[in-house]
Length: 282
Image 1 (cartoon, rainbow, N blue to C red):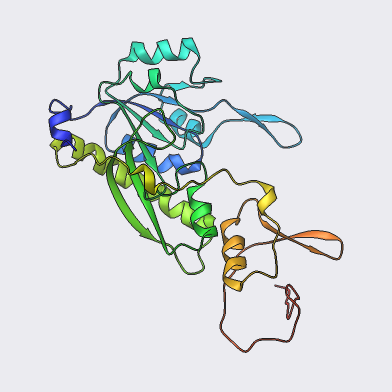
Image 2 (cartoon, one colour):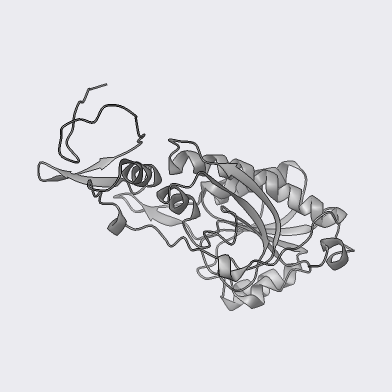
């Protein structure tokens, strides 16, 4: 392991940054860079997508923020497009910052910036590499997760880690709630990492591949509740799929989605699994 100061001894005080991100999760990271005066050469986000019955094209949350601050916005269909690659190369950025961009980036793009590409990933790598680290951590009933600032490689979340921060998961916290907390904290760890690269306080730590676990994309196939499982397992699934796509159970011939859940201690009721013991209307 080499100190970042040895690798980046000429790291600029305010590096020229190309920011890549798309959803709400990436917004706090972009905003903190803007507010702290970093030189953002361009913001790369996914193309506007049709939404609703009208199929109206809607910009990504990151694009809305970038437009509000008058930043240049690039929206390639694929980041491997030749014209996009050449455009980034011509900018000659010092650093590429990637937060929840949503597409795989190839080696030739990652190697353009002088100091490489920095990614903020929502897990304590090498655990939960992949697309859904927040939801998978809750599904597995983890008590903690965290954030990793990683120097990107071509592999799936395999790059060396520069900085990590542990975050406890609340007893009945949903994926949506944890998502929002980690989004805010991602901006903080991003700035700490850039500052650490500048002053040489960080040490790159290669990931142990043998300790890696994976967090594949969530789909509807895992949404159906098995009421014969332990209460803690069911509760974890419901919380992990809140707000999307929602845990499902059939009731009266219809699929009902359940949101928010907690396990409570008390006397066991003589009811079959999945039976509603009590309900109220708010």
